[in-house]
Amino acid sequence: MSIVVIEKPFDEMKLEIQANVARYTELIDTYYEDHIIESTHFVIFLDGKKCGYYSVFDHVMLTQFVIDGKYLPRAQELFLEVLAISKAKEIYCSTSDRLLLLMSLDIQKEVVVQDYVFQPGFPQPGKPGFGLMKAEETDIPGIRNTDGGFFKNLENNIKNGELFIGRDGENIVSYGIIEKSRLFSDLASIGMFVLGNERGKGYGALTLINLIHQCQDSGIRPIAGCFVKNQYSVFALKKAGMISFNRLLKISV
Image (tube, rainbow, N blue to C red; front, side, top):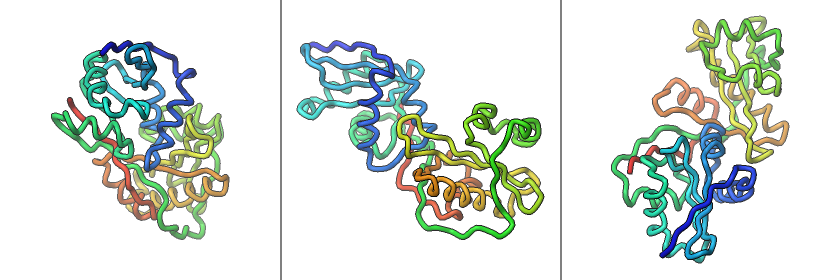
């Protein structure tokens, strides 16, 4: 067996990556999507014929492993070769990525559930007097003073019309974000941040409910990722009627 791998830029791989992610049984959020896009991508050739591709993030983390149909009987063999070539130490894997999940579980040393991925499930009512308004550049100082560094790309988020301010009456109580997917035009990740002195009052769920409506009114499918340890956000997502059928795993090999 002769295996050769050739590095390719994302622009040349985008359609293949889109096709693979579209086959997942559940949606992924932009956090995981960014890890895939910002990986280094390699096409796999077996005995001179293209048989698939793989992607590695930050030189050590495998994020994609795709084998074309007729080569699937040799998938495990190819997977082990890819690990040897890439020197990947761990795998960042969605439970909805069936092939990569199965290959990883066969040789795993440790599996850690890192994130939940939520999608709308049961519509919930909002609250009279609470609403979202789009953030403007003039809002940047106020947001920076109250978001605890939550928004890493604040200026770009505002420029792209992705950031919202939650108000209950005249009071600013939360911030919300709709971060558009870079792979699919009809998909976006939503997230929220509640100001410290306003927590425990249900504003997290209200912000998410309003973000869901914003997305759906624009023909966008909302999705929300959440670290497993962030139980405050998990509670808010469930209260907003969202459900999770997908996990993101860190698998040591």
